[in-house]
Picture 1 (tube, one colour):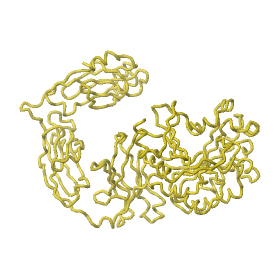
Picture 2 (picture 1 turned 90 degrees about the vertical axis):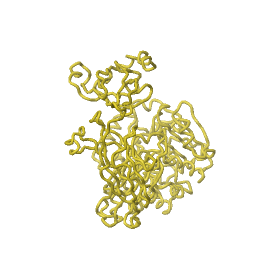
Picture 3 (picture 1 turned 30 degrees about the horizontal axis):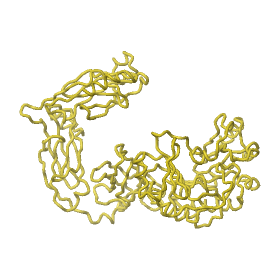
Picture 4 (picture 1 turned 180 degrees about the horizontal axis):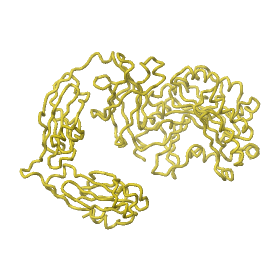
Length: 625
């Protein structure tokens, strides 16, 4: 047998130990653990021949295991056989520790579970109640009365859902129906609410047993007034969750429940009751109408899921619903450059622009291709011109406008606010809905500013930041403002005041104080005169910030960081300036230049392709990686 051969080949090679100790017609039990991590439970995979039937955790405490020195003793397990194995046939059962080749002792073993003498399963169950919202009842397996069975629900011959009958009812327990945990309820899906007859049948999964009072006919009317009563939106869709708001205009201070469907399958019901200040300001009841829903783990399957969101017990679908979610192999981040230049030539910049003459800009059609990646990215992982100055692009406002509303929280950019910026572009930033904007502020000293921000005009910068702050203050959904200060000898004593002013006057949500990157394009004399290399000086900065009532992080260099320096090309190409290289099995990192050339970073071999030749860029990367 193939499983026996595998077990003999790999047995004992991983520090694992475990046994199947008891087997009967209802299930089996035993224990398993890893000697290298003796206090952590392991997961077990259970197979019928080569077919995976379940994964469970060995985490139940047994005193005898603890006495025997098996970690903390929390390593026992038990497993009940699923119903489809109850068929009078032989089944070869094997049990192994997940992500290893270690098969438990006494496995594989063979089971043959009989059915009753007449060749029928022994079940009992009823559909007890039906109304226009759904159905309820109970069902159990007499042969193993504490086993919770699954039931399948059909509209004529069309399968519409599979649910588990595992809800406790005291009347069932008193009536001798196992442990009493055999009740179920089911809400009718949206497509049944159409003023038409539907023949509903309910049966136990993998059997031909139909519950008593099934089939039956339903006809659910459509409520034409709901669109005038309810209001709600799906506002943001992320790689792991989505969020929005919903309320009932007739009861504006009471939260409503919303139902989430994957196609016709109900996957969750949650209450829209989270407080949001912007909703209260917009006179959406008392503001307690926000919600957030995390996608279930099985969505990470590289398949499309059609998600619809509606207010419970109504036919009102939230705006921007339905939408499609597809979770592929994760992309860590994408950095795009909508231009190749900067308006300043700061002496500590990590990008070497010597010899650069022309300023080039990304075309609108290129940007439209690039934002096709957005649905597949985590929050704040789409770097819009991180290394160059995005406000140089004449169409920046249009770029921000065409980003789909539900994906804007993926996007952020960094600016020096030193260009000649109009009110229009600052207002566009405030209304953009992107996650945040980084602002570089290395000094608020008029005489020092032109030395650190070479080419910048202090009065222009201050005028920009004052106007931007006023526009952002008026816009309730404006992006967060994050600030970055590069710590140098010349601004070292000023840093606490910079952090405090940004928090108190310029709406700072977070402030990063960091070291300059040690690239070889920086002038050696300037480096020697300005870089803070002594640990004691960094201690001084840390102590000076302790009493500042602002949200900040101090990023100081590791020991020995300034002993060597790297090529600015290395930083530019591999993303070392914001993230360490990731191995091939980890999520990929991409850079897209202003021409549309995509480069895969932080891999041993680079991968290049022009985005303009791809109909759907994401499909290529899903297939390639």
